[in-house]
Image (cartoon, rainbow, N blue to C red; front, side, top):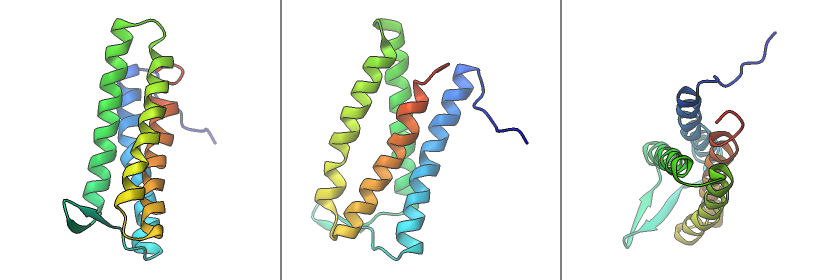
Length: 133
């Protein structure tokens, strides 16, 4: 049995990594919401809104595309682009954790939403700029 590997071609490799980020976030969403029964409600614009699968997938996809774009820009303009990108990405992940923890109506929802951010980051940060990236 062979273990699948990420393709060597940088564009295909990065596209697959970006596509994997919503999958990771949706896995956490499914486990927390539909499986465990956590109400994934947040306060947004003064109204209570439920966080659905489309919002989770779209947000993770946007984060991945933005990360890819930033990495591509850094690769053309600076020395050590992967190192700089990683520092920026980790910083943005930390800042992004403030949103679900402050907007969620319950502690369980806040933890679940933060876990979605962490799952997205866990895919994007090591793999997008990783070896052969």
